[in-house]
Amino acid sequence: MLSRPGGSDRPVRVAHVNTARDWRGGERQVFNLACSLNEQPAVEQWLVARRGSELASRGRAAGLRVVELPLRGEWDLWSARQLGRLLHSERIDFVHAHTAKAHSIGLFALRHAPATRLIVSRRVDVPMRPGFFSRKKYYSDRIAAYIAISKNVERVLLADGISPEKIRVVYSGIDLEPFAVKKDRSLVEALRRELQLQPNALVMGNVAALVGHKDQSTLLRSLAALPEDAPPHVLLVLGEGELRAELEALARELGLGAERLRFLGFRENIYDYYRLFDIFVMSSREEGLGTAVLDAMAAGLPVVSTAGGGIPEMIVPESGGLLVPVGDSDALARALGRVLNDASLRAKMANFNREKVKEFSYQATAAGTLDVYREFVGSVT
Image 1 (cartoon, rainbow, N blue to C red):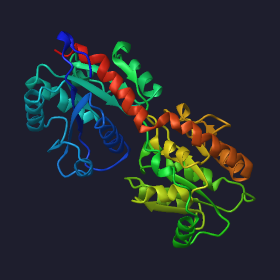
Image 2: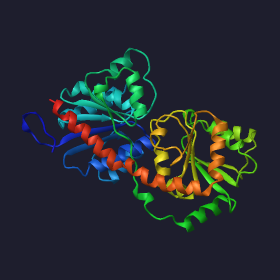
Image 3: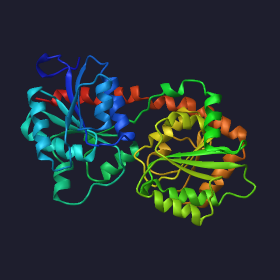
Image 4: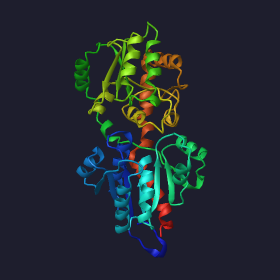
């Protein structure tokens, strides 16, 4: 159990709060963390999720204690009051906020729970907004700790004036189990037939939301810049977002037809596509860390990427992949061309990444998070 003032050894009580309706990387992180901590006798937890969200549904199916609230925005005071009542009645030690809106709602909720403190997981490398409310929110003395998912995010928090004494780095982790199964060649061939891919085409994959900071426009320009003598190839872009129409228009402008580029949108069976890929490519300008890259590493793929955000904390250049400057489509094209043309290099990088990714399991994330709870529980009154 976790030691407390006065010798009490009851489990630490934590309410995880996530305000998202959709299911993306952050929600998967919260789900995996809660599932892993659920096996720890030192922790009792509640998963507070948006009403009708995918996280609430999956959490309940996994046997987690789920509380659904509207969680409509930072100023949802009704939800904050309901959360505060939960914190107070259940004598919860920490409200663990996993989104920016949860950070705000959590602080409002603490008005109704004077013994509870806030832990904030920070997943993005975006500076805090200027203004009085942001300063009150980020510098509150009710915050026990910030958990940064990478050293890159830690740097941003420090630049924003957050005390280093409050920041702990705990890397995001993934579930390695789906990738432990040997690649099913029949499944891969079925996908190739479904997508009508050329028999000898190497498949490059990009799994990311179609939003500005993922910078797929640089990726498309790099694809168009590949030399004509490059081996047959196709890029599959998996994800949805506000820029899809704009990116499709850019693809037409660059002359990238269906034989070289496909926008596949959101796909439920995402792990099947990682098995289809021969190379994983990212073009992000910013990334807190980038768990899609971890998935690619676990799938045994070489990674070609821009050095955006926390990506260099995962990829070892020349060993697990190639990194190029952010926004440089020509450099990205050269790196892709090199990996496309060198089967032995692809194999070497694949083998390296399979081992390297073991440092980024979700169990390691849970252990690191538990260490943060253990460190700060003595400060809870």
